Amino acid sequence: MERSTDIRNRAFHYISIMTFFLSIMCVVGNAITKYPMSANYKWFYLLLVSALSILGSKSVYESYLQLFLSLNIILVILPIGWLNGGRGNSSATAYLFLIMIGIILLYENRLRKILLVILGLTVAVLFYIEYRFPEILKIYDYDMLFKDRLIQIPITLVGGFLILTLYSDTYIREREKLNEYSIQLREANEKLEYLASKDVLTNISNRRIFDIKLEGIIDTREHFSKEIYIVLFDVDLFKEINDSYGHSTGDRVLSEIAKGLNPLLNKESLLSRWGGDEFSIIYYGSEEGVLSTIDKLNKILKRIRLGNDKEVTVSIGITKMQETDTMSKVFKRVDKGLYKSKSEGRNRYSII
Image (cartoon, rainbow, N blue to C red; front, side, top):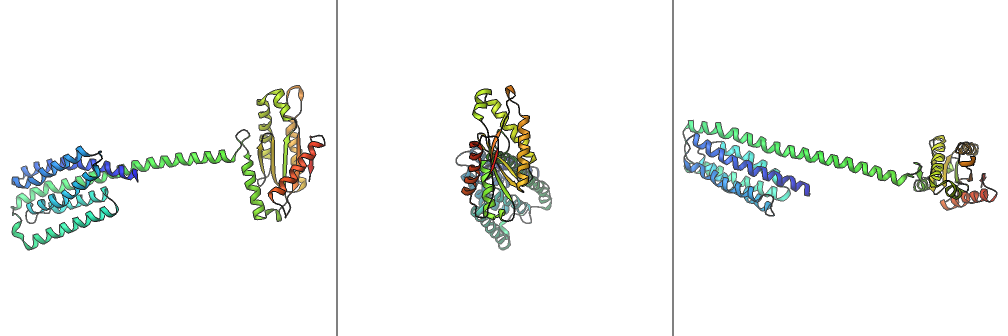
């Protein structure tokens, strides 16, 4: 809403400037066509009103000045121009085009409708006066009317072109800005979504995504028709690795595990980091497939070397999902398997 108001205020400022110079041009045009001085009264008045609008634009009274200028054009300048223009002069009718454009661009909703109704009623009254009381309108010779049209109609067309071009260019610029903001917002949302779903260190899914996927499996009963295993493992004596070789080495171990194991899983399966040195897998496939994956994990671990050729090992808990499972039941079983592997000496897996 604020941006729309800014566009209208900017358009009003430029329309006021254009109206100011239009008044000057019309006075000059009347002098060229040798119209009587009385024909310039409306332009002198419009010159004054538009000057006030220019000076007051971008002030707290700008909206009132817009309405003041519009009502003066409709109720004062248009009637005077219509009656002073003479019989058969279509110039005043041509200016209706500019007035309607201005109302449509500067106003909206109820106020726009009210001003258009006022304009329509004013024109209807002027037509009635011209028809019923033609003697009120002045009579000019044909040459003078021709010269006046030769000046006024091009001015009207150029004025309409300038107003529409101004508003169109302003709209295009605002739309480009909006598109740019939309792109920035989309990129920011994508970044937030990535940060909310990925573990920054290992670049694999985090605990949140694991929980969402597991909950989805249980809700849709996907494990009723598919073999799905949950695997939980952590690095043995990881604290000693950090203490002995530094946290950067510990981070490298976690990253290499994720980097090596993640590409080896099938498309349905999910590897995630729970936090610390714990990893979890939702594995789609048979028990043989799970054990094959564990074997591949051990091969990856053998390639990770620490000082003094110390090997990295993991303890693993494995459980197959059952039809009666809830998330808490699954976690309880797989955690029991992990605890069993640790209590039996680490560097092994236990299926519960």
